[in-house]
Image (cartoon, rainbow, N blue to C red; front, side, top):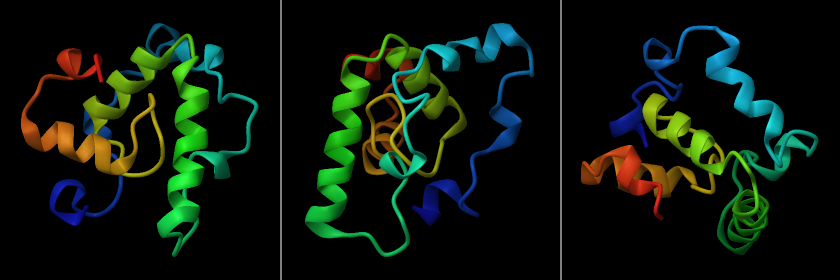
Length: 108
């Protein structure tokens, strides 16, 4: 992850300006009232436990009305952690490294 994300934080210079038009989609997220721990791994989580948590989060994302907006945001700012728009950290890394435009990757 370090090779893409550098210091382990989303690149804030890529974030949209703080207007409601850019962020209102988050109010419609299926994850809005769920624990963040479902979407972000604890330190040291690996193997089947991590896969199971990621798959559960991706299942929630699959029926989310704002999946594409969430995914586009995560790819645009290169979110370094968590499940966003049905994509894990590794999924996003693969898309970004492949050079596939975010609009095309929404078909994943």
